[in-house]
Image 1: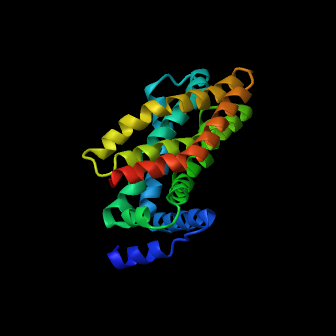
Image 2: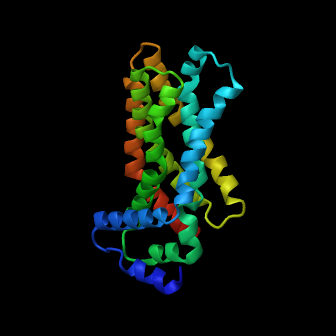
Length: 239
């Protein structure tokens, strides 16, 4: 993308309406994502392959597979999301779009929120939709499968926000992808624990309300503070 097209798109970003800026950034990133369908398919294929191949390395006992299925699904979702996180800001950083967004009068937190929302819709949402197939493959009960889907729906946006902050902090650094993974993985541990624990609790005949409530609270915190933290990290990258 040349500089004139980049500048034109930045000038078209709404200035005074944060919601309009969010929608503009989200729709722009969705259009760009649809032009690289191979990258989107890679996330889905990776998730499916992990869920399919993992049972080959453990015992094929149905009870064991049912018990470990939530953990496998969450680890696969986390690793699949890591594949796309380096590109969240890297492309815009490379062609100068991100720098102009930092300098533009549009609200940078709203623009960042739109980019993260588009990232989740193209990377997290497909994994949520594929979760019932994973539950069916591992012989999970319908209740546990529904809980797994609900947990992924609440937890994967939080993973996107954690990844966005870390991706912004590693902009322009050498070995940024490896550093990004080292930053995201420890921070994602609580989300994995509560997400997998919710489905495991249902499978054991317990209530999953506490786990899902904690995931929902984490999602609210991410959406409240995530845009400002990510915008600050982007600004720091240009200082």
